[in-house]
Image 1: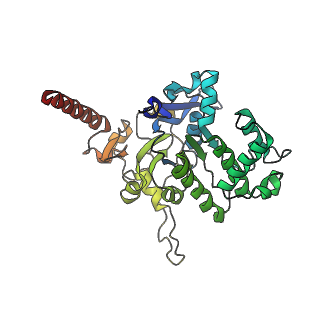
Image 2: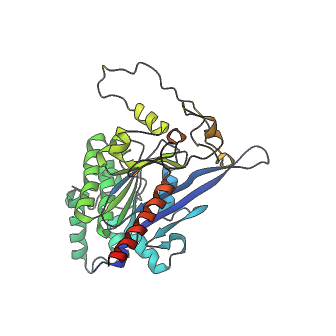
Image 3: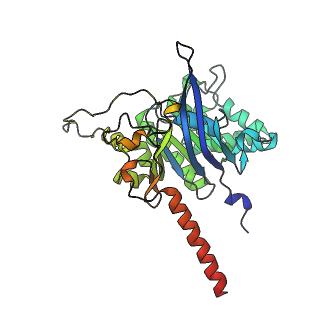
Length: 357
């Protein structure tokens, strides 16, 4: 029999926006949407790694904090198993904390330098009642550390300054694994660790997906990292999701000018093949909220049209699972139209089956 909770998404982000007040010299207030009507789903099964990609300042971390319940959204809602995160009861909040775990960017900033690193493991075991004795707690810690390719004797009893950034970050992965969460929200987890260790860290997240059915929202500005992880990808530009789909689709057929320019900015690994021309990208201020009824990328887009200044582009369907918010693809069906036609088709199939029965 199917568990009813399996059909409900673990995290359901619905049209979330976060607006900040920007101080100005005068009396007039200005507001900026750090996140602007973003939606995404993270299911329990099958476990997936979803990449959230964008340049610095695109709203990735703000969206992560909203999903973790650390920052309330201005508009929209985040649902955990169908319940709003901002309205969870104490019992549901503990369930949320156990099943949705963060991995932050700074591998040292998450530790108190006056405590040994294994205190993070001890507090997790204690707060969630994972062990009934010291021996059982030690066995759990040792198992979790080995799962992230660390030797317990090299880590337990050490202070943060005695470990490398990669080791500290993997200890946090071990702490997360103790809880066997459903979702990991990883905010630029490899940007501050050695290149040699990054591959190891990413492989551990892939193992978590395959062995323990743990999904990950991988927040990164590095398209190479997203490509290595595979799976779905969402491109964020000034707080808006401008393109989404499987990463192989987006890299083979980037349909939004912003995605195209992100790809064009990746240098070739061959040092003899130098860039022959400079990228034609305008440096512009982040759009204000009163400019929300137009394309967020219009000031920097080389293909801007008059309609881009007048309307917010809807999501057009390029292919199955591949959506792009750009008026360059007005000949394609809109996402809402495809959803309505699919719903009508399913309704017609149900009527046909009923008539046959």
